[in-house]
Image 1: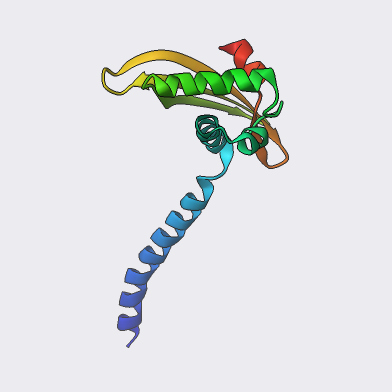
Image 2: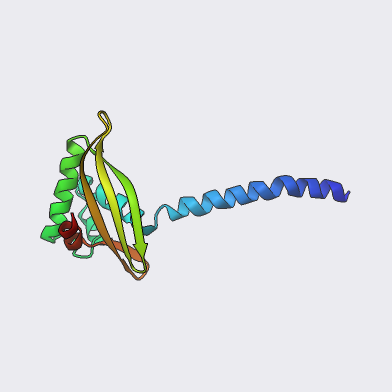
Length: 134
């Protein structure tokens, strides 16, 4: 009788662990600096002012945010896709090197060194610092 329960436990435990891992990572895709960058890129392409406002320190009305959004749109319209290369995280700060690559020729047009700041539990892009470092 105990062998049956042990056999079930050996099968069920890894399944539960896998399900928990998938659930945690699917939830975490909406957190962190990578998520903020992904959301900003999507907002720039869609003209979503509310999300650009929520993902930046300066806010959507800032000329620096508008410059970054315009450049992201230009890159996308030219066929270049963002490809994160590295992430340097420090307490409260992050720097992400993103290459913009043409998938057809695998050529890199540009790199942007995105600067992000942690406000409470929310990562935000510092557009002014991003423009100054790129």
